[in-house]
Length: 211
Image (cartoon, rainbow, N blue to C red; front, side):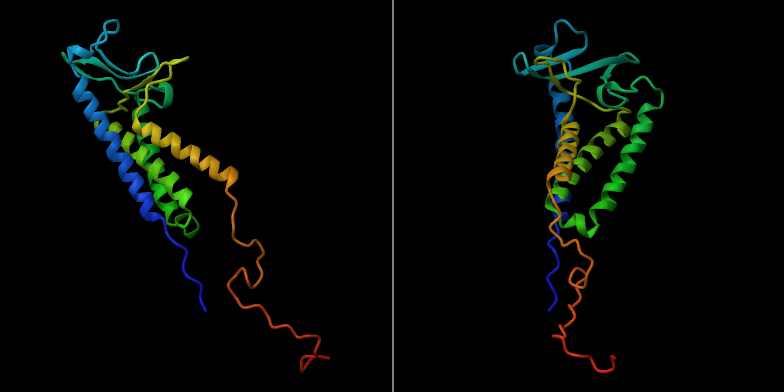
């Protein structure tokens, strides 16, 4: 009697990847459309900045613009987290290439039998892929990542977005999975571990043909 195939959670992986990508882009376009040159939200102290407090004194929606060819365009992060390599001329292209390679590696990884049957891994990788694609879209279309979430309680955290949040949550889930989730499959390489029937016991009887 053959055992049933393990349940696949690839559908959950794709669902979270699509939801993460769509949510990231809808939020970016929506917030920029809401705040762009709206005098109600113009920041009094910082030029070309619009700000909406969500948690006063702690957490805001905030976007920055810069002048380019006589018009305002979204300020983008061409580097990595905290503006790392933001001033490098090829920083955006470099991180776009890294994002593309990471997305390809994740899609390849998810189809491994041991991964697609692991719900936690599928959730983590789905979040990471959604965040990766969200920021990759920005790097291709806007030549940098658009940020609009501003945390400034106790310390000023670098501005971020929904894609960044997906990446951090996915990476954190991967770390927890590596630390606390143990493999439930047998570790011995005997016949049972390979799906083969165990040899029948001889009960101490002599086998014909043996001395």
